[in-house]
Each structure stands twice: as structure tokens, then as C-alpha cells.
Length: 216
Image (cartoon, rainbow, N blue to C red; front, side):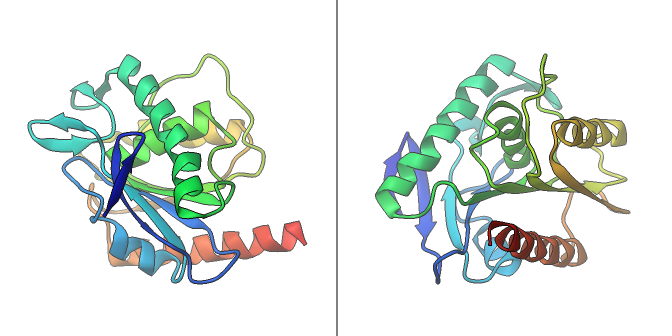
């Protein structure tokens, strides 16, 4: 555990070699900074990991932003919390010594929703994202450009929380902004499966290799 930055209690694990990204691990409702560490290690072995704890409490359970009811978000709070999380990334990079320009979000549920909010409002803040069970965080009046940003969307067809049409709308928005979106449909509910984690990890490693080839 390290000292809070921008108010975020967090864990930071450095990458094992230069060039590997730092995974911004964003837990779901009721999670902590420890919840997604094993997932991060599985997705991209050796990558750095930056894992903050959400600062909003809902009946004692940490979240990254407030909601008014299931699926109904407090949009004013979402703006404030998104900006705060965006500031956290370079501030943490300055303290921990990783490349703030090579950060890939990995979010589940509430964590995926705030990552989607970052993509839509601060398109330069993330080099990519793996979003499991994400919803449309808000309807932007204007889509900001996300040219070629790789985004994985893991969607459960039987998710009781997220309607299929909502997940499809998020994919449409990100694609229209220029992101390179991969939608992975599974015959599951809100929980993740080992097969899905394996597939998203393979996609993440391939996206990283393609990005490196492009830069060369």
C-alpha cells in the first residue's frame, strides 16, 4: 500500500521490463485496490499495475462514482470523479515512475463505466481499455476523437444489469469516435468467465504487439 494520491488509496506494481504498459485496474462495486491484481497478472504478465480504490461509498461498498439507482448514474458526480481519476494517472506516474502515456484501463462493471467515461471525455488519457460489463456512462453532445484506440468490450447476453441495447450503443459510440472496438459476446450474465479472461488477454497482447509495430 502506498500513500494516497489525488485521494486514491492504491497499489502500484512496476512493470518487469521497459515498454510494457501499466494496467489501470478499476474494480466493480464493493471491490478494493486488491481485487483485480490477479486478473492483471493473467491478462498481461509482467505489465505494471496501478490499482486505485473508489472513493464513493454506497452502503459501505466502494465505487468510483455515485448512482441514483441501479443503472441510473449521478452525472454531476461522474464528471467530478472522472476528472479526478484522470488527474490521478499522471500524478501517480510522477511518484511511481511509469509512463503516463502507456496506460491501459482494465475495468469491471462500475470500474468499466468510469473507464468508458474517461475515453469519451479525455481521449488522450488512456492508450487502450479492456472493459467488462460496461454501460453507456452518459450520452455526449459531441464525440471526441479516439483514432485507433484499442477497446475490448466484454458483454454478457444474459446480464441482468446491462441491457444488450445499452452495450451495443456504447460500442457504436466508441467506434464512431474512431476507436478500434472488439465486442466479445458471451452467453453469460454479469460475472466473468475464464474463457473470456483468456480471450481478452490474447487480444490485449496482440494489440500491444500491433501498437509496437506501428511505432517502429
